[in-house]
Length: 114
Length: 114
DNA sequence: TCCTGTTATCGTTGATCTACGATAGACGGT
DNA sequence: ACCGTCTATCGTAGATCAACGATAACAGGA
Image 1 (tube, rainbow over the protein chains, first blue to last red):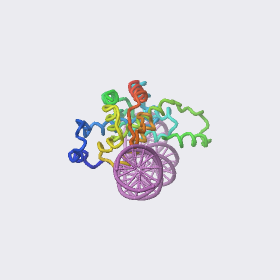
Image 2 (tube, rainbow over the protein chains, first blue to last red):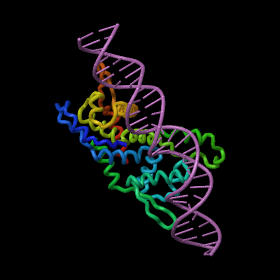
Image 3 (cartoon, chains in turn cyan, brown, purple, orange):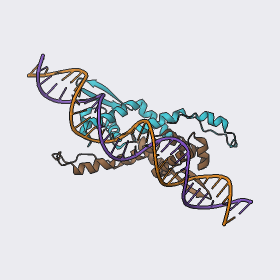
Image 4 (cartoon, each protein chain N blue to C red):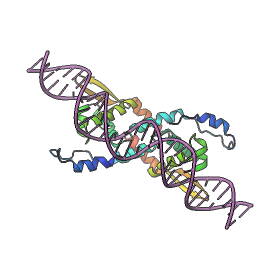
């Protein structure tokens, strides 16, 4: 996506040096964007809210709560899991999902710091 | 972002009419997702942070701060403007962008309520 | 072992995103 | 009026997303 080095461009750009340019390379921007993207879909917002409100929930219940096919919900769960916002632990034939509080707090602190 | 197929397809789908639409309307989820989507990209995160830190900024400065083409930055600014997070006012040949505090607060409250 | 129920993954289709260069439009200065 | 600067939009190409049905993987019970 953004592959060109911003730092290189910064180094070469001296003309507007009147400001103490603090346009940080922002390694956190990537992480922030990834977390924001995890909840950048109504279904995923609902899933996160559901899990926050219920502490834990098996996949089937989540599917029943959304007007989406099971495979679609599973994909959303995968995205949320990859972002770290939720966790899933196998419980027999079922999978129980729950919120991952540290990552949720990280998202909150990112937004709060805006 | 996703409203098209869900609603349209549900209306046209008669075969699973046994259970009334149980989809949680959750109008706020849509709005929340839209706001989250606005900052779900590293470049847009940086733009928002830049504007928060500088109160106001003309388009050209923002372009200079990112390793992206002017047209690409303009598109990101358009997305942010459509989300309501930022505003742009014409100032002669330039356009001065600034944060829209109420919308930013709305995003913050959404996240805080999680 | 076979079957049942639960969940993840595959494969596909259409829509959207992201990036860029090229170009058009608007404004101020000469 | 002309020209140069600044910004938005157009058009395009490639990548990714979102949705679905079909199918595979997996654990537990008959």
